[in-house]
Length: 85
Image (cartoon, rainbow, N blue to C red):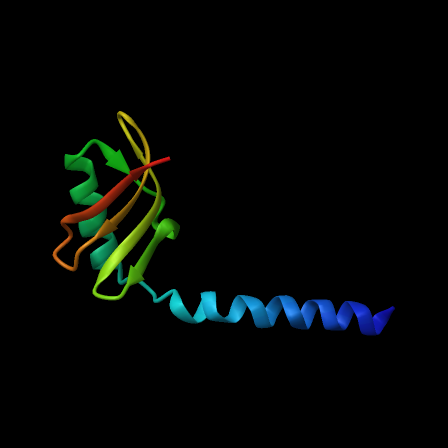
């Protein structure tokens, strides 16, 4: 039984590795700039839901006055894509 648990934990960690490696840390100044930009749109997002994505950023579970969205931002913090959830 010990061997089964060890293999399961190892497999779960191995499968999660690409996700952990791809999620780059977003600097505090960029997080603040993103939050300020979202305020102008009457939106907010938990900083934990901001991820660097190539040259831009991916925001999950953005709460706006008119609903909940996932958003992709360009490097200059303009909205590249906005998907209603």
